[in-house]
Length: 280
Image (cartoon, rainbow, N blue to C red; front, side):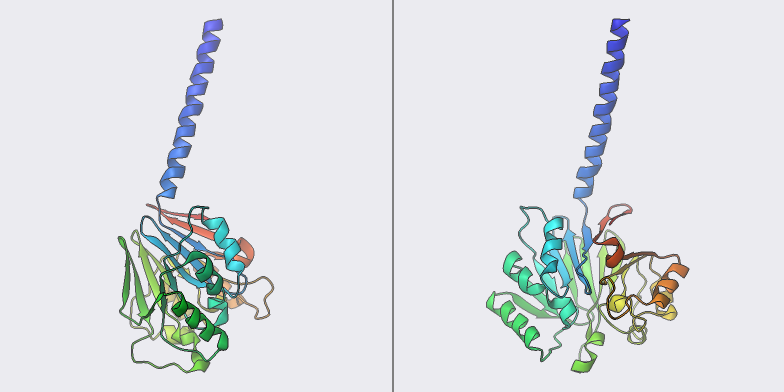
């Protein structure tokens, strides 16, 4: 009887060990996947893309240094570098956090649309970029950034098109990132009427909703073109703009899109395996 009990105990321990090994296998496997972290920076946008074995890109950085707290929770103690900064357009709620990121993470490249702003704060950012020896690269539609086996494609704005300072939103870099066969589309703050004129296939799996869910940024016709499965909305709690607009949420829900918004979900992590792994 005693031998039988010992056998049961040993067998149980072997099962627990096997389950533990399986758990660690999945954890280690997930760590080998490219990951998008859509960060909660209040009323603004900030996205970190950690490409497996191919560096890190930051798309926008929110309005202020709050992005550092969120990055601290998503980068390990040993990860002190962000390689490339991409600014969608020259509005403070998209670039304010870059000041602190440049000082702490020492990126090497600054990518933007080349559209200037007379804002003193934006001019200070450009000066900081230059003083830190960063390469400053202006891109337009048709340009591509290769990252290992993945690619970021610039869809808008078109070359040769000038944007007035009153229309900085439509100067936004519309950026499509293709990771492991999945598409993620970043729209900056561009208006829906402007986006519908883009002569490109906008269909995507993951949509960074334009202009924090503003009703001017999204309508039914645009969503028909994009046909997203997942929507990400960067928005501050109880913000004065009323973002995201109820009509935008209703449209997304009506299409069966999974909605993640930073005011309700906080940081959102998406890992790109054979299937998408989403955590908030």
